[in-house]
Image 1 (cartoon, rainbow, N blue to C red):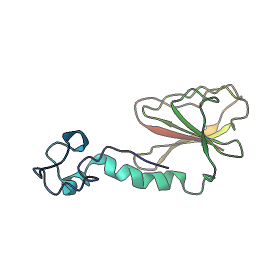
Image 2: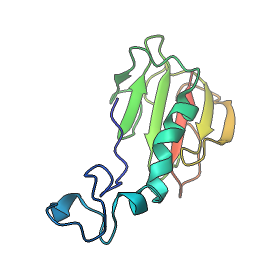
Image 3: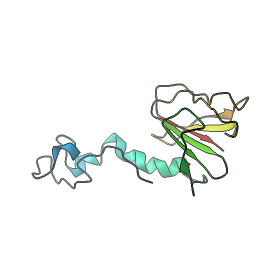
Length: 137
């Protein structure tokens, strides 16, 4: 599974902010690799393991049919993991999505909500305004 988080300059091993010979497209302006490891996004990849720890991630597959969301994964046993950049409720269109849910802030791994939907058609709740991972198992 690949993760992209915009830490330009680090992956190109740009030694200093003015190190020549690098394409500007892949660089963070005014930053070498040492500055880049301090960017906010550099911590997010480490959070991925914390958020998914203990979940059935073997053989997960992209899923664009069970919910309205740009990024969703189905587990082999019918579970669902959804990422939404700005949070908000997730509309569900498949009765096989488990009713129980946990909502995690991917920036720090904190559980921000957990519960159970009333019916298979009830949206997974969530206020907007922040990135969220919705886990239905």
